[in-house]
Amino acid sequence: MENKLSILRSRLFTGHSGPVYSLLQYGENFISSGSDGVVALWNFENQDEGLPIAKAKSVVYAMELLNDNNTLLLGQGEGGIHVIDLNNKIESKLLQYSNAPIFKIASDHKNKNVIALDGSGNILLIDPSSFDLVKRIKLLDGKLRALEFHSSGGHALVGASDGCIYVFSIPDWQLIKKIEAHKPDFSVYTLKYIPSSGLLISGSRDAHLNIYDPASDYKQVDSIPGHNYAIYSIAFSPEGSLFATASRDKSIKIWNTDTLQVAHKIYANNTEGHKNSVNTLLWHSDGMLISGSDDRSIMAWSLPI
Image (cartoon, rainbow, N blue to C red; front, side, top):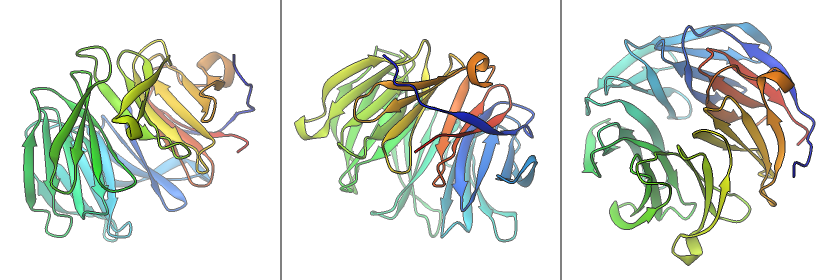
C-alpha cells in the first residue's frame, strides 16, 4: 500500500545531448555528466543553461570531488580518469590505469584512498595526493558498478555483475565475505546503508531491493520487488526518513525508510516524469531530489521533508 506523499517537479534541465549517468552535489549547485562527454555545473535558479566544466572524448559514467571541492575526478568509457582543476577549469592529469570503462569513483576518507571500479572486474586504489596507483585488485571477469563504505571505516562493499556483493576489510582490502545477493549474473548496480538502522540495501538488474543485516554477518532479512526492471540508483533524503530509487522502467519511487513502503511513484504520466530509463539520483542537502535519465534531461523534485 502506498502512503501518498505530495511531490512537485520544480525544475527541468535540458542541456545534455545524450543520456545522463552521474550527478554530484557542488555546494548549493550540482554537476552532471553523461554519454556526450560533457560535464556541466547547474544553478537551481537558472535551469536553461549549464556551465561547461569539462569535455571528455567519451562517455563519463562516474564523478568524485576531492580537496574541498577544488578537484573533480571523471571516470570515462575508455578507462581514463580525468583530473579536473575546478579553480582554473582545466585538466591537470589523465590517469590511464584501465582500458575498461570506469563505472564508479568514491573516496575512502578515513583511510585516505580513492577507489575506482572498472568494467573488467578491477578495483583500483589511488593515492588522492599524487594520483599514483597504490593497488589493483582483480576481483572477477565482469563489471563492477557499486561501492559503499561502512560508517565504522572497517568494511568496503563492492557490487558485481555476477549478482554478488563482495565485502572487504579495509584498509588492507582483504576479501572477507561473498554475498550471493541477487539472481546469478544480474548486476548489482547500487548499494547504500540505511542511516537509521545500519542495514544494507542493494538494487539490481533483477528489479529487487534486498536488505541485509551487517550485525548478523550480512544475512539477508528482506527482498522487495521494487520496480519492473533494473534498479540503477538509491538516494536517501538529507535527514534519512525517505529514500528514492531509480529504474530502467522509467520511474522513480519514494520510500518510507522505517516501513519500506512506497510513498510516491513518479512516472511521465502522473508527475511529468522521465520518458526513458532513470539512471542516477542525487538528493541534494537543500532537500531537492535530482534525477538524470536516458531522455537526456535532468529533473529536480520538491518534497515535504
